[in-house]
Each structure stands twice: as structure tokens, then as C-alpha cells.
Image 1 (spheres, one colour):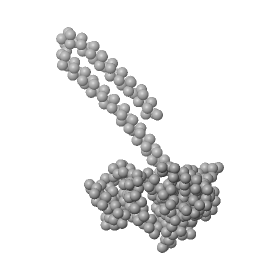
Image 2: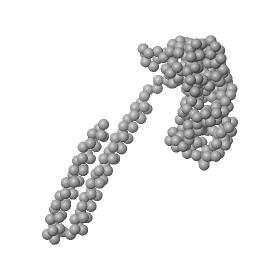
Image 3: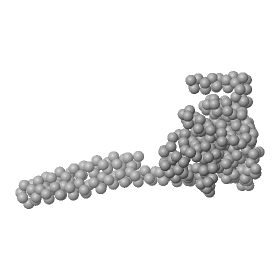
Image 4: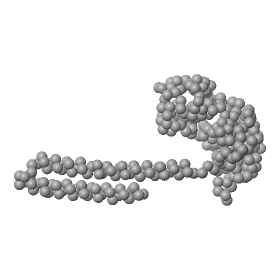
Length: 344
């Protein structure tokens, strides 16, 4: 706003002074041309000099505007850097004991973003090692909050979230990040090369390791067909690739990190059918032998899960296989009908 106020008077004042100077030069110069003491060429040159004099002054306003934007961005950056760490390692934190089986459990978990507005109440759910569990429910039911608690973006206000029986609050951040991986709906790609984006999960990974991951997922041919292969620039936010290609890169990144537990926020929900098939094939390879918690927005994800947990208003209201819940739970049956209507 300060920049806008300054520019609001700066431009008119400079423009007014420029016009006054040009009019004065024309008036005085024309009189001198008429009495023969000044040539027309000299008058024209003087007018051009005046214009060249005022042009940099006008350009200064653009510099000032850029300066104000830069200062505002720096203020936000420093504010973020000064933000205190809320979720950190407590004294005595330890690594998850090896070997990691990959079981995840929420025991009596309650949570609220705002003190008087509970989001989850007394949630208890378990995903055994190698099991694929789908979390379903209407918008605002608490599905994504469960995923955030598993990733320890927040700590529960009551109860505990644990891996192989180890409370996440007692585990080091480094060990937790090596054990857990989150794949959102739209995988984020950084400006840089494809190699750098995949190896972000493991900066020490060799090209051979990256290519082994690509071959295992069946996308090595796609990468090899790119103009520069692994050296292909993905551009800002992966602008060079389609949504499906960005998701494949995100899956390859997760595969390279080799986590025991994967949390998926419906990784195929924004894809067209053909691309979805390709991503699902890569997902099958990625999830093989790993525990996965899927935030399901579509019926297909629930059908493929080993177990489905339905959440409503922050509480678990049904749990079982897809077919069991269709047969036994009226709420789940209603949700399935809504899904089916949406795909017609």
C-alpha cells in the first residue's frame, strides 16, 4: 500500500513537470528560432535532451516498486524463519528400531485445530505391516487430519500415534522421515532437472539407483524418450510435465527413499483414465510389501484396500472390507451410492 500511494503521486508529478519543461522549451525556443538566434535543429536537440532527462526519472518508479515487493517478500521470509518449531525432537528421542515392520496405530486420538472445535474424537485404528487401509468419509469428516497426524505434522491433543509401538513423539524427526512418505494429490516438483527432483529423497543416490527405480516402476522408457533424459529441466512446479507425469516423478521419488509406510492422499484423483492406469501400475510396484494408508476420495481406492475405515464427524463409524461394509453399514452404502452417481 505504501508503494501504491507513492506511485499514485509520483507518476502525475513527474509527467506534469515533463510537460511544463517541454512547453517552456517550445515557447522560448520558438521565439528564438523566429528572431534567428537559434536554429531549428538545436531546438529539436534540446527537446530530445529534455525527454532523455525525464525518462530515467520515470523508470525510477518501477525500481521503487520492485524494491517494495522485494522488501515485503524478505519480511515474509524472515517471519517464516523466525517461526518457532512446534513439532521437534524432544530430549531423549530415539530412532525407530530396525528392522522396521511398518505397522501404524492411532490409539484414542483426539485433535482440534482450534481449542473449542474438535476435529477427531477418540479415534483408534491400526494398519498392520504390509496392509493397505483406506480412510473414507464425507468432506470435513477428518480423513486428511488422520493423515497429517500419521506424518506428525501435528501432535494429538489426546491419545498417541505410533509406528511399531513407538510413539511418534518419542522418535527422531530423521528416523520418522526415513520411515514415512507422503504422496499428495499433486506431487510438487522443484525447478531443476528430473534427476534432482527424483534424487531429492536421497541426495547420495547414483544414476544407476535412479534408473533401477524407474525400471522397477516401468517408466524408464518414458524418461529415456525425454530430450535430455534425467537432465531434462522440469521448470517451475514441474510446468513442463502433465499432472500424470508429475505424479510418476513423485512416486519414483518415494520409491527411491524406500519407506516402510506410505500415506497417499488419493494420488490418482486428478488424472484422466489412461494416465490413471499408468500411475496405478507404478503404485502397485511402490506399495508391494509396504504399509499404506490411503485417503480415499473415490470408490476404486476403497475397493482395492485390504480394509476400509469410515470416518464421520471425527469418529470411526464403520470398519471392514469394502464388501462387508456395503452389506453391513448403511452410511457406507450411502457413500458408495454417491460415488457411483458421480462416475456416471
